[in-house]
Length: 109
Image 1 (cartoon, rainbow, N blue to C red):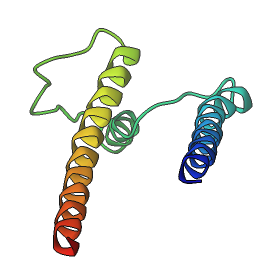
Image 2: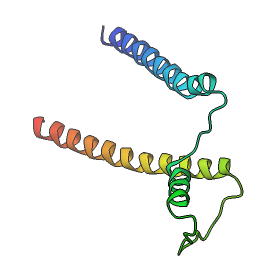
Image 3: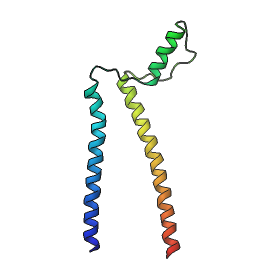
Image 4: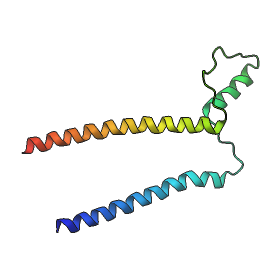
């Protein structure tokens, strides 16, 4: 009986994960379809435009050490940085959760 419950639980979990993956893909693709001619830029570009409008003679006092060859590579590096950061964060949270659960089971025994 416990094995049947595990199989149903696994099927339900797989279905939930597939639904979530489809939702994520739709969230990534739908804006590209709806706004075909839109420019997708970051806050840095908007800030640079605003600064240039306010003070056209502004000269930045600092420049980046590394300049990516294109905007796409810059976006890729930003996404990798975000993925690595969230991976480390959620690994730590999972580790703490597992450790507290292990202590909880140890106290029950």
